[in-house]
Length: 252
Image (cartoon, rainbow, N blue to C red; front, side, top):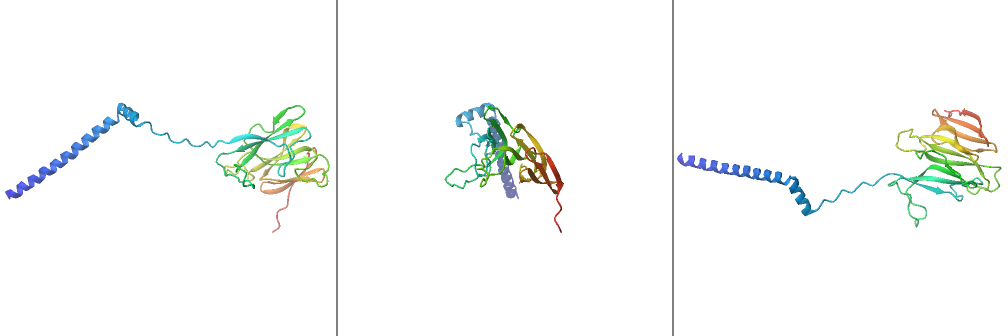
């Protein structure tokens, strides 16, 4: 029994020594951490190792705007002038958007852009004005109305007749709440005339509308309203409304 009691106390002393050592090390470590957290020590360490590298700043996604003059007719643009008018289209480009590769692979790829405004310049007087006050809208399409009958063989982009008016299809609000302004939203049709700097609102369509000149003196608009198709006719060149009627539903 005495031998066992001695063994027991020796083990107990060793356990106590181990516990005291652990407590002592924790105390020393805590004291060192407190010292390291003081401002003076932090400043000294920063001077030795240098300042940490700054985190890279996020790339701005702010759109850029640039006017583009349409000096000559092309296959996808109407002639820019009406005898004495020059047309500038304001383009909006969003950085980081899906890049469009041109048909000519040797040409540099470009991000897609949207037409958001148009400036008309009078060549004779130098007077210029934007059609819209701001750049929050998107111009989907422009349809030109020419003066006089169409010459034989004339096509879009090469028609020599002067333009007397344009019908613009414009998206102004994200009506379907998908975060985009496109043909799936409500589209407003505006009329621009050569002799007037102000736009005239013709109508609003649910989605893009089908437009075109019918004969010599009528302009037809096939559009949607209240989830139904309608047909409207305007006189040319004064653009007075002749009729606006619903179309029959599809037969079942």
